[in-house]
Length: 369
Image (cartoon, rainbow, N blue to C red; front, top):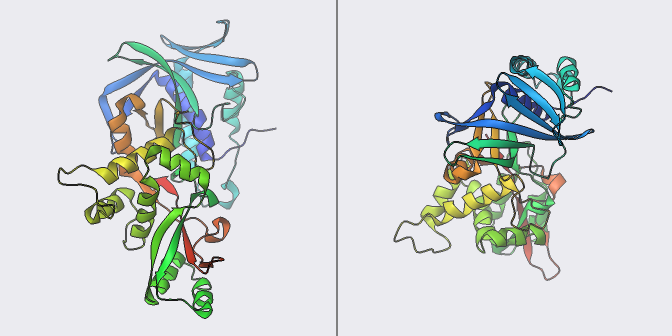
């Protein structure tokens, strides 16, 4: 049976082939530009395949494939990996996402034939939750060879998701102010335009002389994960969701700036400490490398190396966790909020609780442009 995958999954194979062909990867800056003088040589790439753990090693002008015990299985010119990477890139760039015949998963037989040749039998290597590829990089500054897990984010398809929406990412708000009648509630809950439904419903609540006040993060697991990062982070995210309703932008950086100027948590900003930005950057980094909303988090990172970003041009940029400030700035500069399905995730509807309190949920989803 032919291997099938979407652009993101095929991008993982593209990264494997291109890194082995190039033998190195450039670091990227916070604006997705290549840093010319910061290069990480590839010592080896590790994959779990049906034969067990395999090592792919750039060696002079060749790529050597070995078993975990060092037995050589295959040796090919690195230029063959370069050629295969370029062919795969061309295929991915040629596929129109609007083509109904190419939506979702598709096969690329030419690439699959080469994958079989190099003992690569799956698009996605067996890995922990956030790790897409394990690489031993040489750091010329520290002179160390370190094995690390990286998460791959590809711009060849749609924008990557940093924090997935779900019922687990709902934030609960109390409706305060004037009393709403049952007729008011029914009217607001049935507002269902094709666009901006959440904005319209919240505006209707305000028009009745009411406003939303943050109550809690709905899901206890996500609530606890956020509390591990910062005790005020849940409320800050809730306030950012409200802030989004008042602005034309969904860029997280802009919303944090707007919230910081209001300073609703009354932090001491006399010394210009970037409280809100710092806490949000911590969330972005933790979401990128290990923390997931619906799973109790122990504070450890799975993808402890950082991110590999595949640009539309096919260039690959490395955001190494060693350069934490640059990594955080990349996430912060490119993250935006996106509204997911209100019906699937059960939010944006007025609920009357048993004690008569009225509540309303907003949902969090973060993507990278």
